[in-house]
Length: 367
View 1 (tube, rainbow, N blue to C red):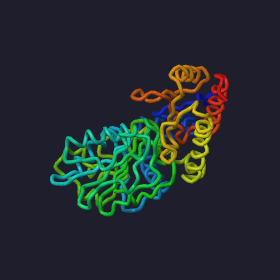
View 2: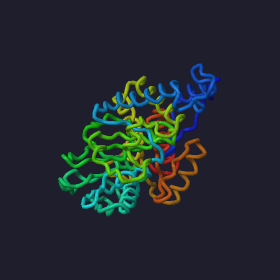
View 3: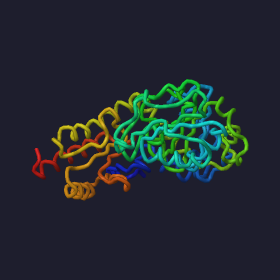
View 4: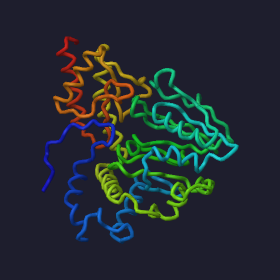
């Protein structure tokens, strides 16, 4: 039995759409996973059948992201939000400072949590301009003796994304890549730690991926609870306690799908084409649609915009629902409109939405 071929145009910011082929495979294996007579959700996390799933997912991620050998890949729980606390608990020692680059709500939340554990500061910020851009690399302030520098690579709420990352030398660079990991090739070696909730591009909610350099692990604070130590999970291959086994299985299948369609280069090309469809409509609308992000900081994952009147915006959002487009409302904190075009969103979904935008503009008397 296959899933229905008709699928909603799902532009939710997260949890996001998953590839249809992955869902179909999970459906086929749900009751009897590869001859075990059990669902993958029922397997012991100590069994050889699950161990294969677990290790294949780790190896696939290493392969796709070209992760060097001096890094550990961890599967944790608690989302990126728990990482906001774990990072300073492990790496912000007394007498040290850590810098946070402020580019949106998620960097604000990370900063707020880190304040509980030590001395932190704004290394750069675009808040005064309503987070419409990413700071220039030469605007970021940090010193060689700082504990780390933290940034958020893509900002789901404001629709901005980093194109170039700072070279921090001996200062560990830490990035929350929850909403754009696996969307394009990156140089992992620039970072001491990368973390990402799975529910955008990696799989279903419930799994958090952490990619951490081994020498940073060795510097971590040991006087913290066992489950909050990265070393606990590294020493036990993320199997110290029961991991989110179904989520990791799904993550592994999403990674297989990425490989099958051509890897990160192919994914990046597709994402650029999808986003361009919608940005082109915004840019040629003569002010009918107003993009939030400055062009050089635009996100390929989250396209944020307003219409030129509140009434039109309300009507626009009502019609998106009638046309079967789900999740177009902007984040509750800022309103407006947002199209989240993560990896599994088909090109045709973005094409259909761009055509709807054009028709809506014409129907309302704007050429």
